Structures are given as C-alpha cells and as structure tokens.
Length: 354
Image (cartoon, rainbow, N blue to C red; front, top):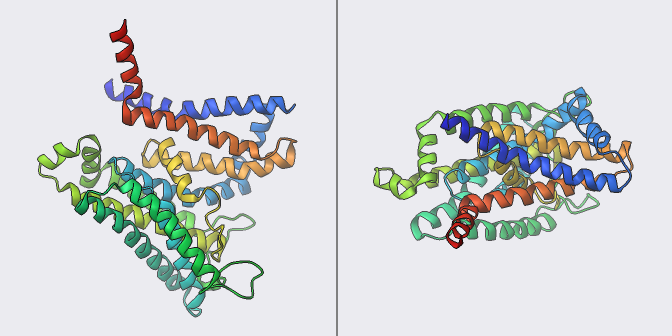
C-alpha cells in the first residue's frame, strides 16, 4: 500500500504540472479567440495519430530520451550533472568532423567510428567534474555549468575558423559523408537511430532498476554517508555514473548529427538545447527510464505539433513555448520543495505559530 501511495504521488507530481500548464495555455488561446480543445486536438492528432506524424515525433524524441537518461542517472543519486548539453554538443561536433573528413567507407564502420568518437568525447568531458567532485570536493553543479559555456565558445571558434566549410553560405562545418548518414524511412524523418535509442533505453532500464549499480545509485541518492559507511565506494560510483551520463550524451549528439543535422552549425542543439530539454524530461519522468520515454515523446509531440497549430489555426506556435515554460516553472517548484523540504518547513512553522 505504501509503495502504491508513492507511485500515485510520483504520477501526480509529473501529471499535475502538465495539466496546469495546459489550462493556463488554454486561457491564453481563449483570449486569442480560438477554441483550446480544438487547438490541442490538432496538436495531438497530427503528432501522434498519423503515421508520418508519429514517426517524426519518435525521431525528435530519440536524442531527448538519451539526454533525459543522462540527467536521470545522476540526478537520482543527487549528483547534478548540468553539463549534459556541453557533452552532447561536443560529441555531436566531433562525430560530424569524423563523418566529414574520413573517406567514404563501409556505412556501418563509419557510423561506429562516429559514435565511438562521440562517446569518448562525452565521457572525457564528464570525467573532469567527476574527478573534481570526488578528489577535491568541488561542487559538480558549478563546474558543469561553467564548462558548458566554455565548450560552447570553444566549438564556436572551431566552427568559424579551423573546421569551417568555406563553400557554405553560413557558419558550418563540412557535411558528413553519405556513409555516415542514417537513411530515413519513407517520407518521415525517422531512422535506425531511433531503434538504437530504444535498445539503449531497455539496457538502461535494467541498469537502473534491476542491477546492483541501480540499487547503489538509489542508496547514494537517499543517504551517501550511510552508503559509504556500509562499505560502498561512493566516489567510484559517482565517477561511473558521470561516465555513463557522458556516454549517453555523446550518443545523443552523434545520433542528432548523423540522422538530422549532417553538419555542425551554431544552432546545432537549437534553443534552449537538447541537453537542457533533457533536464525537463528527467524531472517530468521522475528519473525513471519508462517515465523518461513517456516525457520525451510528450515533449516531442509539443515540438512537432507546434507547426501544425500554426498551419491549421490562427494561434501562433509560440504558445507551445509558453506551455513548456510553465511546465518548467511548476516542475521547479516541486524540485525546490523536494530538495529543501520548503513546504514541510512552512507547515511546521505555521503549526508552531498556532
């Protein structure tokens, strides 16, 4: 019964912010003179209930699943890897360089090399804050946040200078070779990268839910001092978690490069970025692999559905950005409450005052 209560609470904590955001979004749509139910119906129908729309949604959800998992595996242990965005773009950048500069070769081999390089880049970039955390007790949130901006500027320099494609009419690296590209299915954008992502999702489910490491991650998240006292090498586990997180981020970057972008541009990860979106997805999914899958698909529905809203109604597609912003706001309230016990303190203070 206690477990059922926790599950119900977790579901409510994820669903309630979405409902509130859609209600407030509906009020704005009403103010614009449109029917909110009709607008939301178009958004969902065109993104989920047409074959092309559903496959496009899965395509856009694929890197989000990986960045969501990359966040979830560390956040579950109360280790705040805020560097997923930097790890993802670094992996994507060098996957693009390898894909462009290596000669045409066997398609599978070329992709394996691209993904291998991206994984190595993501892991190395994640290892820096992990070692500083374990060896020097440096706050990993501060380090990873700062490294994101350092990485963005470094890649901007490399893209505008060393690796710039002078034949392009804008700042970009050369287009990757055809042997490094994933082939799209029919008229949709979906590729075999999505299948790879689903395989990784299943593996991560067993790692986080059924393996010894998964139980250790949960133990560290609940009480790291007790876990250390019980004989667990917490520092080693933190490094392992960060390396896994970096590897997942690198795969996300390589997959986005080889299935969608095909060259690195300054808007490769869009705005606010696939890594930052992964944080929202991890929070919305309750740091659970299944929750991350559902949250990533939901978020991709908003992304793909925004164009349809703009096409079939007079509601601007920016309404989706407003809804996303409100979801983040409501999730932030929950996140702050969970980590500071704010509401419990408020209730205690109120009770003492009475």
